[in-house]
Amino acid sequence: GYRVLAAESGPHGLRLVQHQEADLILVDILMPRISGLELIHLFRMTRPACKIISISGESVERHYLDTAKSLGAHNTLKKPVSLQELLDAVSSQLK
Image (tube, rainbow, N blue to C red; front, side):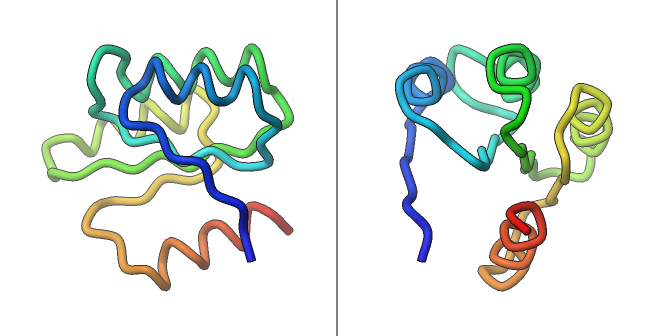
């Protein structure tokens, strides 16, 4: 029941959000050209009402998720993420 837009890179995601309304943004921490942490900072400035869920993988990257939270991510998920876990996080943020 959600309308989803996908971006293959940080710059593409930034352009999408500049030209489309979004209620929620899923941000991977490690992306080409612009990191997810940079995007979270930019989205907080340009779309302050938009919810952000940050996702990252390796356990050594756990500090990235903590940093994402401190930059304004509303929730963080550690990969691998099950479909149900993702849907629960999305639903929780869009209440």
